[in-house]
Length: 286
Image 1: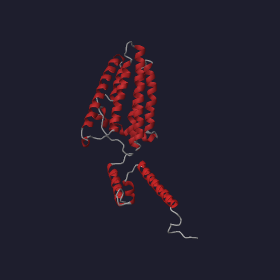
Image 2 (image 1 turned 135 degrees about the vertical axis):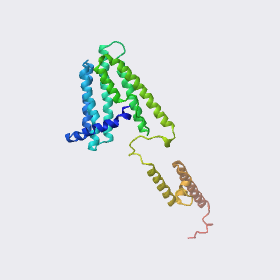
Image 3 (image 1 turned 90 degrees about the vertical axis):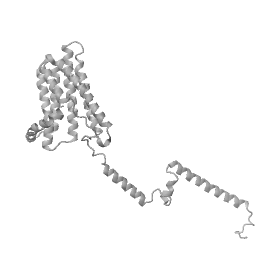
Image 4 (image 1 turned 45 degrees about the vertical axis):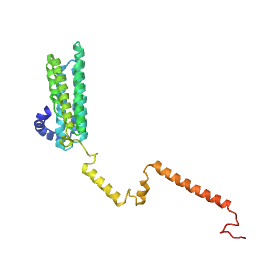
């Protein structure tokens, strides 16, 4: 939901901050790594029961994650490597924070409340995988009611008011599962349409030749075959491979020709031995 409605406005708002950070000498990878490092003490503080400290550290961890993209665009260093690093760091941060909440609930509450954060973690990993897999196949799987920004906001609310922490976790689990269903249905519908109607995502295709290049390559190959009479019965090469292109067939043909030649030579030797010397017209008497 955040990506579809507020991301453009937020990016416009943090763009001046990104330009200001270019003068600090920092890179987008530095901000991503800083957010990941701050998530460790945040998880430890939450696990030990200091929820307010954990809340402040969680906010401090989310700020660099918000600014790394703006800094990369301002410096012109946006890359697939940076996007990959940012995505992995987000998943690790989620695991740390939800693991800390699970530890806290196990220490302070009875029952199965400690399983809630891990269920949210598993479902959030599922929706992240759905988006990654869909984009790798050329489809779009963005959107949903509970993406990462919404999860961070609700976690901050639950940490600020510990009384509602468990109800907030239940709401997060329900909305995250609903988001997974929404993304599955969206990709399923895209996959069921004709190929021409499917909106492709922005996936890198540098390693795969474009369709016109493949067509041009095929045209050059056909032109070369026509120019060299490849596969025709009149050419030596075409006649050679017209009998079969498998190695076993050519080997049997050569072996059969060799045996026939040896048989002819042996029959010629036998005729020469059996014919008397005086009746040989091409001989001379000494």
